[in-house]
Image 1: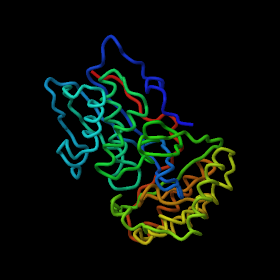
Image 2: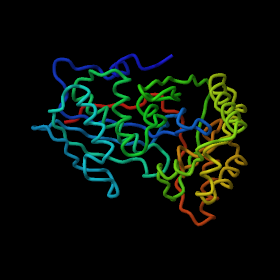
Image 3: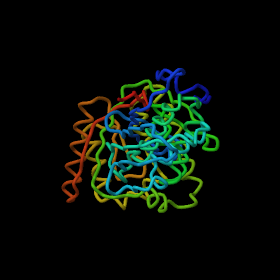
Image 4: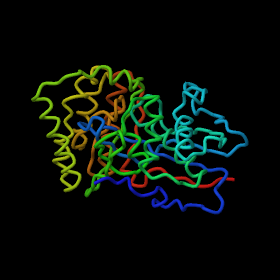
Length: 329
């Protein structure tokens, strides 16, 4: 059953019918795309780092990108996920003549597999939506975010849907967006290790084979089914076994030196399993509690550093709130 019928106002951002805010700041959390075997069909919002966008109404009808958030991101609004998303929202609202200035505050690293482009798009869409009084449904808002993600990273919802809606999300379809929350009935922590290796999403997708043997597809379907079952039943051991990715991980692992050893070190520290976060290179490991997650994160960092690669780590859990905003002066 779809979770997209209600307005985003139902998430707690009260609709301001008499007077819309003129400036807002929106936050969108990072995410773990795929969650192992769920290529393009599963995603999870995680606590901690995310992207912020400050949006202000301006006179005229232009979208002005005051700060792209990072020197390596395009300054041209037509090429930046945040500005594309904002423009898509105002068109969907019938307000293409509404001018806005945008300032991006990047909290997520670039090309790291942590949903950075998605978070920028979602934060901008939520901010623009708030400026216009939040008239769109969740499905309509998600479609606007997808337009931006498609332009910069590919047409997939496994990062933008959890970043917008929070929690663990399963994706049935993109056109139109058809997504649902996956029930999670367990305490679940993730150790995340980001080796400083650049992996562009487009490049990571390009290495995937076009066709797979029947046995591989059956094994992948079994992993995804077991993963959703494990989350719903709270079976941590089953969760660990279900994180086996037979499709994307084998093709992508050779591009990230130290990946296999880092994941094995996380398991030895108590993690039940793990894989790439999104297209990588960030590696995640699922853990029963925060202490184990910290041990697993430090173990992965140690392995990556031994290969000569700088590595940042963090420990997170599931962000159930998703994107949010507040008015600013």
